[in-house]
Image 1 (cartoon, rainbow, N blue to C red):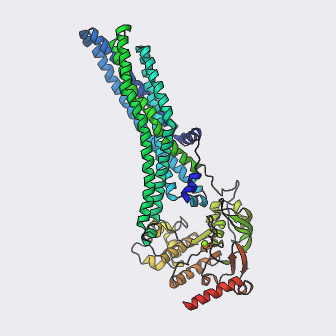
Image 2: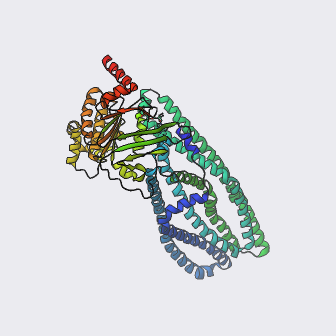
Image 3: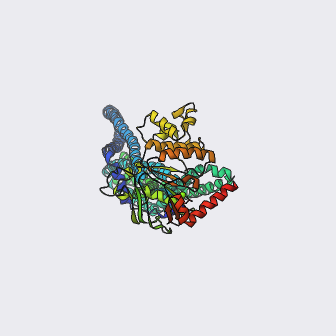
Amino acid sequence: MKSAVDKQATPLRSKRILLGQFWKHAAGSRHLLLLIISAMLADGLMQAGVVNYLKILIDRLMADPSAFVRQTLPPMAVTGLVAGLLFFPVAYVGHLAFSVLGSRLATTFRMALYRHLQCLSVGFFNRKQSGEIASRLTQDVDNGVQIMVGFITGAAWATGVLLTALVSMIALSWKLTLIFIGLNVVYFTIWNRFRHRIGKTAREVRDQAGEVTACATEDIAAVMVMKTFAREDRFYNRFGTAQDRLYKAQVQAARITHVFGDVLQVIGKFIAPVIILGTGALLVDRDGLSIGSLVAFWSYWGLVQGPLGTLYGAAPGLASCMASMNRITDFFEEMPRPADAPGAIRFHPSEGKLNFQEVEFTYPGDNNRPIFNNLTFEVPARSSLGVVGPSGAGKSTLVQLVLRFYDPQKGCIRMDGMDLREMTQESLRKATGVVLQESLMLSGTLRDNLLLGDERATDAQLWTALEQAGAYDFVRATPEGLDTRVGERGVTLSGGQRQRLCIARVFVKNPPIVIFDEATSALDGTTEALIQDSMQRLLKGRTSMIIAHRLSTIIDCDNILMLKDGKVLGLAPHASLMKTCPEYAELVSKQHLHRAEE
Ligand SMILES: Nc1ncnc2c1ncn2[C@@H]1O[C@H](COP(=O)(O)OP(=O)(O)OP(=O)(O)O)[C@@H](O)[C@H]1O
Ligand SMILES: [Mg+2]
């Protein structure tokens, strides 16, 4: 199972590594972050400063109400108005910058991750479920980045409020401030006890949410299989199981988060008032504390509940954020394999000669057996090589190696005498055109799909390519021609039409080396004959490798390679291979027999 491999491959990183990852990508937006931190700090300072007025207001009002109305009220009102006017731009700039920064960082992260994913090996995508990748690219980036930005700016605001409040509280009554600090020690101890468990459950929720997305994506892709086998119930149950695990993880996370949050509430709303107001009353009675100071102190207590809640309440969010950052970092740490060698050069194909020399290859992974052991053969320039052999012989693996999706462990593969590892992968793949059995098309127009071969091709060149591929007539017959939209993965086209469009795409690309892997095996005889013609036109003057089970497809190739269990049983033109390779002769006789029966 892919998901099992996935889980093992996700080590937990330290916070330092995860924050480093965040900081690295936040580099371009640090000035914005600084602006928000300053605005939030100023916001906090101003909010806390206002409470100071309460003490003056109450003490002076109680001492001499009419003097208060004449002397204190007017300047107080003016100061309040000015503070309000100043507060607006600070708050507005801070909040706007906060939203912009969140979206900007999510964009930076997502683009960087997308670019990195593009460089990863085919093996990586074989290992991971596509939904799992999509979930990290979308949900985890949003979750990780938004919470991190929220926490950093929230912490700045909280620090502003707390610092101002603390200084003012000490000035009002250092004895009450000591009680305030004592209550916070209790808060911190409780928070510390719950922190790890909250983190663990938040991580579990992120992982299970990823599983649900992965399961949904896979099921949607396999909708035809589900319907043909009438196994809707099985798919429903499988999705239900994943969803059930997510639900349980969410309930568990909610349980632990709310126990923690509500214990803090009990202290904040019931125990603290009794202690603070009780002690405050004692101090008013015995220590000369003014009523105004007590009310102002109590107001500060109310004011700091917000920032304290932000800091302590950040635990679950922060744990979820770290879980997401961990899942993103997991992908960032995947090394592009095989990577371009340092100093790799652009490959400029001349004739298109291809040769395998003493190639040894095993797919990466612990339990894979060797596919090739000492494989040597050559495809001379501008000649065609048919490859036949039983299923599992390693025919498609040859294609993966030529495209350098994998590197052989020993030996080397050369194109025009140059080791594939010495050239850039981009230039190698530009020199090679591939048509596979499953002809993949992207959603978009026919033109979009054909231009994958060469973005600069003109419409006239596209029509020529369609003609060469035998696809001209059916495209011409559509009302919108090149602008005809094809569904995702080309589902609105027939198999034969898709195949011819894929061949046309290679005509547009015009590479010196062409590979067909079972490109016609799924087609009926008439369509195959049609495609054979386009194939022959495409192969002319190019080096080619044609992999096929149907011998009729490869019988006219310049050479035929008979492969079995990764070994070359024979390599010669059809006529001589019939004489020198009994396995090939047997294959031919079986297929003739089969045809005779047909
Ligand atoms: N990504 C992979 N990871 C591990 N093993 C693989 C992978 N792809 C293929 N194999 C194994 O390599 C062997 C050769 O596979 P390959 O696809 O090259 O066979 P083939 O000759 O193309 O077969 P067919 O005619 O059925 O297409 C098989 O045993 C297969 O199980
Ligand atoms: Mg194959």
